[in-house]
Image (cartoon, rainbow, N blue to C red):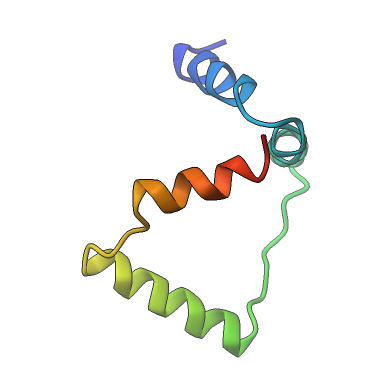
Length: 74
């Protein structure tokens, strides 16, 4: 196992169980070659475009906002 993968697992162990399960499913899909392309709706494409524009402008959620979101899963 590579050091980067070990680091990822160390980080994931600290996350709430439901998040760990979601990440595990994703890893298994990737490892099994079962990942599929996702087709976005026009609304999802628009949301993604806006999100990328926010990143370009340096607009990110505050630490306080992120902590509040993570607190819901603890």
